[in-house]
Length: 141
Image (cartoon, rainbow, N blue to C red; front, side, top):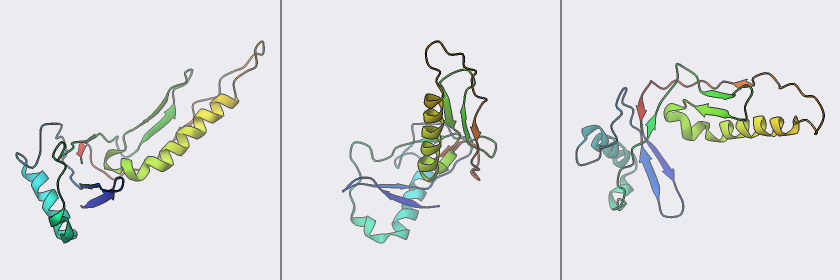
């Protein structure tokens, strides 16, 4: 797997690493062969990257991407204003726009259903949206 995502005018995010049950944050090009392999796949895919400069302050960023069993959890916690949105695994970037829109919809619906002072209101039932993810548990990207 390879992904190359622009982040601003002069920055590219390179990635594409999945390691089940790997939770260490202390990995990088200097000490972890899978990271070196990932970087090599990106260079092979887009050879012009050979001339790119790695960020000296943060050449490798480790992101732990936990995944639920097949689904993202995106739901309002009943009786609260809390909206859960987690379990995207390595699909977080891809799912971010749709999930953020769904969270905004839930929040706006909740705001518009607030009672006026002095009026009785019963809470709406738990609202739930599920998005599937084919990613394994314990992703690292």
